[in-house]
Structure formats: structure tokens, C-alpha cells
Image (cartoon, rainbow, N blue to C red):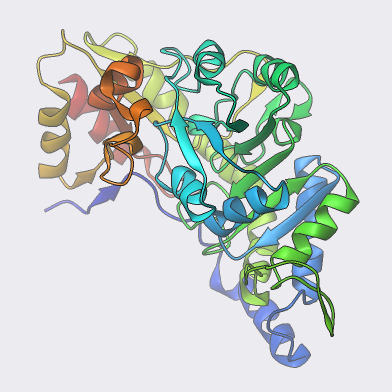
Length: 367
């Protein structure tokens, strides 16, 4: 039996490179609460990503929850059904009502026209997702937000190091939230961050992620424990040194898939966005009606060969029990998202994936 191939695997630098970091943590005896590696990673990530201020978190979901708290969001928030459940869960944890809007058929991101149609007097914010790291139409979304007086919080879990033109996509909106989970392009085992527009906002977020403490005896908000520890931060610093080779290898795999699958009847490949630097975090394909197999039959065919691709995102968030009772969750309101969710498969893509394994995936799809 061939070895299993998953849709993604974490990048693990050589163990001997991590040893000095562990020894330094041991000597410092500073394990968490904004230690030296934590501070260094915040600074180095901000420089690498081209942003002014960044607050690290223990994971991306806590960062989403905190971002909503930091902006004091209330009422209804317009968001996408085509995402990982953490996007909408962060709203429920803040006692907010998700309002689902349909997606664009070419980008799979929120359709700005559908956002505007979903606005009610109770709407206070928009939470778009840069799906697969492909930038949303940030200009159109900001224009809507400005017109109606709404906040914009981007779930940028997939968008590490992505740019629009020369600018980081993370600068769009009021806040952007990153995930550093082990399956992401850049990881700290678990982890995340909020990109902040100014020092004042970062200070409030730093209070909120540490129980609301402003100093030893002063609590200024009902905060949470969202702090990243020193081992996570050290791993992130090491990972950052390898980002050039990580992104290069991902691009090579993306190119290999594109070249080989471009002419396969019934397989649709999303074109790369114009004027955008990508991170090649995912490689989605759509299995259309003229392909010999259904999407689920192809998915099963791959699994039988130990290739664990993902139907990502299927089901839609709006289909889960805690959301499907919402008026905005009906399939009739989300025809594009419903169709894409029935067609999509994300193929394996990660730095350790060998060309022979990429070719095996291609052969099973094209053969």
C-alpha cells in the first residue's frame, strides 16, 4: 500500500534548529505572558507582512472572538457561508447574529452586491473571508462599509503574506485576523494574530487577550486568555526563516497541477488573481457535470488510493444545526455557495509533497 497523502501537512524545520530556542526558553524561565520570543515574533512578523501593528494569539479562533470584542460589535454581522466554522462560531460566542450572503462564482469570496442586499438596520459589521488566500474585493466592501457606517473584520486565516498590488491585503478593513494553525502556510503549532491599524487599537487588544489587565491591579475589560506562549513563538521565529523556500515549493506544486489538469474535461481550475502575490495555500478544483465521475465519487476514488483530499468547504456553515434555522441560511438565498460546495475538492499541497505524489494525484484525476 502506498503511503497516505493528506491535503496538507505542517512544515517542520530540522529539529536541531529548534534546540537553541528551547535551551534559551529554559534559561530564561519565561514560558508565557509576552516573553522575549513573543515580542520578537510580533516585531518580525509585522516587518515580514508589511504591517505596522500585530498582536499574537494562542489560536485564530480566540483572535476572531477578540477582534469582535475590540470593535464592540453588536447586532447583525454579514458573513460568508463558504468558510471554516470558526468564522461564524466567533459571532455566536459574542452573542451576534450571523447573516449569510452569497459568494462570487469566480472568486468564492463574498459577493459585494449580495452584502449590500443583506444590510438591515441591525447590521453593524461585515466579516468577509479571503478564501484560499485569494483577496476579496476589498475596495467594493470598504465602499459599502463607508456608505452604511459598518465595521469590516477580515477573516484572513488563509491570507498570510498575500498582497494586493504592493500592499498587504491584511491592511484592508478595520482589523484582519490570521490563523497559525499547523495546517496553515505559516504555523506556530496553534496560533493566530490580529493585524491592528494603530498602536491604540493594539493596546486595547493586548488588554483583552490578557483577561483585561492593564497593570498588576487594574482590569479594564472582561478579557480572555488568548496569549501565545514562548514555545509557539520560538517555533514561529524558526518557521519565518524558511518562508521563502516554503512559498517557492508551494508555487511549484500549484504550477504542476495547473499545467497537467488544464485540459481535463469537467475539471475547473480557478485562475490566479491578477495583481496579487499569492501564498498557494490551497489548490481547489471544481468537478463539473461533464466530468465522468461525480465530485463525491472522485473524492472516494482518491481516498481508496490513500489520497486524503478535502471537500473544502462542504457542508456550508449555513447547513449546520446551529445556523440552518436562520432566514439567510436557506439554500435559495445561497445558490452559488451551495453549488460550489457540491463541486469542490482541495488537492494536496504542502512543501514536503514530492513530485511523484503530485503526479499520482494528477493521474487519478486525468486518467
